[in-house]
Length: 196
Image (cartoon, rainbow, N blue to C red; front, side, top):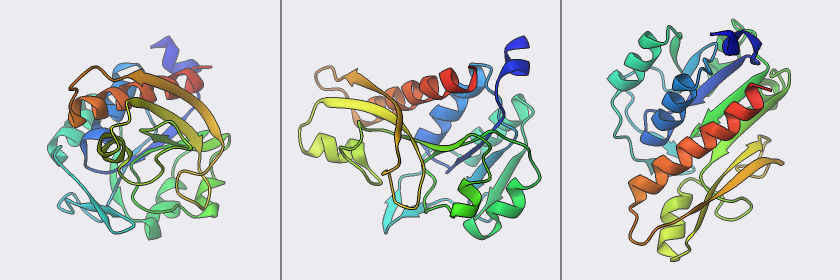
């Protein structure tokens, strides 16, 4: 528990999907507890998120995110962009950490982070920007998988790269396995920054 006392504070933003779930569970299991977990949507029943017209596959139930929040005693909120700043204003944080937030976040919200607002993106940026980089890489038969943590700005996946790690793709590895590996590796990169 002493690790948590020394780490920087952060809020976590995501959707009800596998990538968000794997990132969040890795952070929590690694003793990086956010001030709050903010899930996109007005309520738990809003099951699908959409980024630029592309629907995000949602397969992790709301109950899994709720269980994580209860287990680690972290507030869980369902918020759309319109209510994001008022919700965040209730917390003190150094970082905003996102994994699959489905829309651009206002400059006012991004600048509310004392240190940085950062996103975990499952590709080696600047390659494969966008909502589904793993699918795009698999379609192109590109085996250079990885994950990037980058600063957020007013453009999707175009902020300054903070950290990256390449992941070797074993033969015949599935989308779901690559997604999980990227999420865990991305959470690891964030933990290194938060625990500094």
